[in-house]
Length: 89
Image 1 (tube, rainbow, N blue to C red):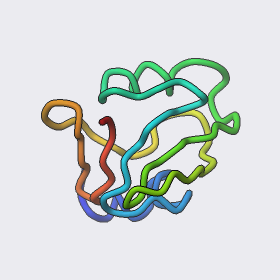
Image 2: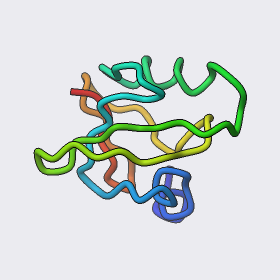
Image 3: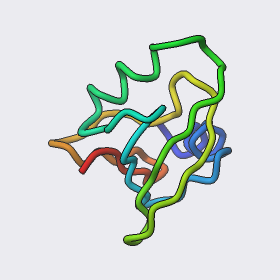
């Protein structure tokens, strides 16, 4: 994903920032990109989903529409897209 896609992604629209770590999606713990990929496909596309993030040691919640949020895979359990959003722990 390039920077332009990152800026217009659901993750960016929901307020996720570079370095944010996704902890859970829809109440389910995210340990890596495969977990997140599976969770976004559950339920009804577009329904509201709460995503819990860790931002500099502080837990926050953001709301996104169910479906891909604009994050691509990476290495191990810490995945960072070109926007700088990190998933997993």
